[in-house]
Length: 117
Length: 447
Image (cartoon, rainbow over all chains, first blue to last red; front, side, top):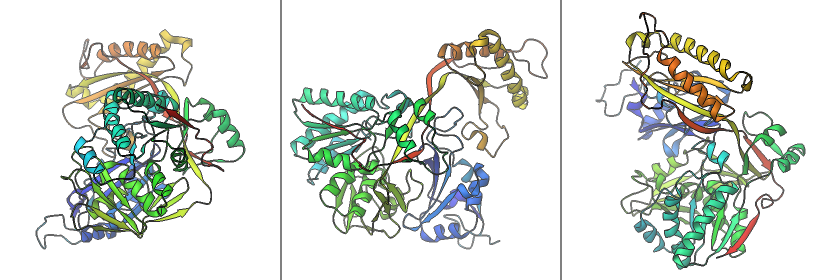
């Protein structure tokens, strides 16, 4: 088991236009990317639960050329509108950083250090 | 982005490679709706002048066009005129005489209302159908042009193209497509270079990117010799600011990157991309952006350090906000229509960044910042409420203490800050065009 920040090179969020925010989980090596992609925790349901949007409005794409998983959700409040808290959508990735990913060893973890569920 | 700066050495290094044109994006919606609401620039005139004072002579000396898109940053007429003034100053100072094409992107609400009735405006994603009243409420509306208006301007002999709102990639795809480049590589190269050096492995400062496009693909290379691109860094840039990295929707169609190959070139710092494809759209559509006034706002920041108060913060702010509302109704009375004004507080230290989306509802730590917001149809009303609210907050009773309390630490005197007009993005729609040039009038000016 490892936390997402121990696995990803970069976790970030940013507006994709004023009405959507997009999350990028970018990895260093193909095996970690594939392990996280296939671990069954980075799902539309995860984003639906964390960000309070209907699951069918979450688009989730694994983009192999960039070793990246990308999710996009409609913003609950349009960028800059009265109740908005993050005009650029820049810190919305916060709740993802410590996500527990089962069955994957963190970067730099000692060989055999992974605890298999 | 125009005005964020780039090293002069990078521009010179790029020019040595004999490019066919210089392009620069000057716009974004990232910074929120106020730029479109007000038409005002995001970056200072001085910063924009500095960049133009290098780009303009460079383009003219080398006999290549300079294309600037999404002027300043909203791409509205006021923003375009502001950029045009700066360009004229630079040309006059340097004794330059370019032929400049100005392409406008601002749209009239009445014309769009007719287009809406004709069924040519459609909602994007989960947006609700557009209402004519929404069009009429918007202070400014722009349409995001594709490459065709740029090409028409170049056809008319423009040395410099200053355009209103446009897609970022269209600025760069336009001259490439006009020169006969295959659409897949042309659009994909445009998408990568529009952010300058952002597709390099470690962009230490804003800088430029060189794109080389041929029939099979393209390569990109940071102009600064100290930066490099890797296959991963270039592929990752397809993720930036877009919902789907494999399908990038542009006015005339969709760039499809799912079959792309990214390879490091022998120089170790440029990346070759092949396999980019472009699917022409059934209908040519441009995105509409609009901003409407949400009111005028005054804010009051205040720190809280008392552990007793921190433990009862929600209950304390709930009763305080009700007291502030009651007092505001008392002195502004009939001037405030219900629903036209609001009083709110944000709690930094708990859910300042995420608001209602924050899964961690606990307030931990020894202090928090309260940010009170007062929004009303007029600035004076918002400020009147804020002035009254500050003192109400100061002495709002804290359970556990008896007597007259002093509850909040104001960092500033006066404690209220006027934010001016606040705006909201009001359109999330596309407009179907029979003629990609029609909404984007081009004017040629000789300097």
